[in-house]
Length: 482
Ligand code: SAH
Ligand code: F3S
Image (tube, rainbow, N blue to C red; front, side, top):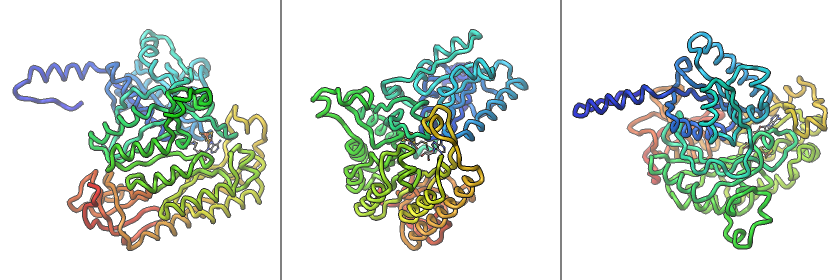
């Protein structure tokens, strides 16, 4: 706790300190996607209203909450190890400590944690955080507590998040929850429920509030942002039943982007994630129209093979994806594009894999996230298909595309040599205390000597060198955006 010392009001400050010390301590940790990190800020806000302060020290926590990820088996294993650690600390230092599991694993495993494993006191699914005060009261009385009910409404639009571990410059703003896509490999529709969009008014208010607090860049978050659709609330799939007035005044993603870009013309705007089937020309044109919308699209494709795309229930073909890439490049020539790719999906042959390789060669992504297929219980792929690609084949294919991506990243990064890029300074470089680290609009990390600049400045950087993923340069002045 920071000490509040005011010579003239010592009595008052002492009372303040006392109150602060009476507060219980929350240790909150997040794993997985950006949405989880964003949700943890909602949770911290709810818990602050319950008299909790966050702490970075596990040993002193009264309550430990871990926001969990189920996307791959490995993610769940990591969290199980953390749960063991919390319980070890609890035994050694703090027997009264309570442990709660939030997020996708809570939703997927439900009562299993409480009944079979007995290593947690509290289980709360992604749509039930508003119930935390009630659940906590149960726990305080010595009972286990659980709420894993998924919602049909956007759940947290009215909550102002407490920014955790913030650099004060970049922030996430969630715009949709859930996903209706049912990709056959993916557990998210089961753990996060149906797709719902958040009221644009509350999104804009959050963006304005962030700007006034000094933030310079936001990332609009959703599992599939391009299918954002506000018509007064409710599930995306029920839009057909909306009245004509609701339909006429509805806001889709390109309109929302425009609203955000106009609300704060100096705020950098990013968004993630785009699903190729829903990314419209309108969105690309809106990006081109507004300087403050960053020229980067994260556009997961998962596979380059039409047959595998179909088995994955990705609702587009290889050709359609390539057309989309062509359109992006035509409308925004310097747009960075990144990917997610899965290798070793059931039945994937060497030919299918080569289709992925050739698609990567066609697009030459700036960067990407690549995974071996991990079978998830309850998904269509798990129920209908055999996980038949041997582990060593999966690993070899993964290594092949990781290597290929590194080559492409290097080509793309080198294109910036001897040019001037705009960098928003976010933090000190991990490698040197003398350097700042920030990102370009294309989401490429750039490092350069600190000189007289500070965190939150937009600076023009002359690129003099690079690695495959990082630009190295020298600041030549503040950019016009300050
Ligand atoms: N639309 C989401 C996707 C969430 S999952 C988003 O906002 O990012 C992130 C990535 O994990 C997916 O794009 C996919 O490449 C990978 N993934 C999902 N399920 C997987 C599985 N069962 N095995 C391996 N990788 C998986
Ligand atoms: Fe998962 Fe596909 Fe949705 S990857 S999050 S079901 S778009």
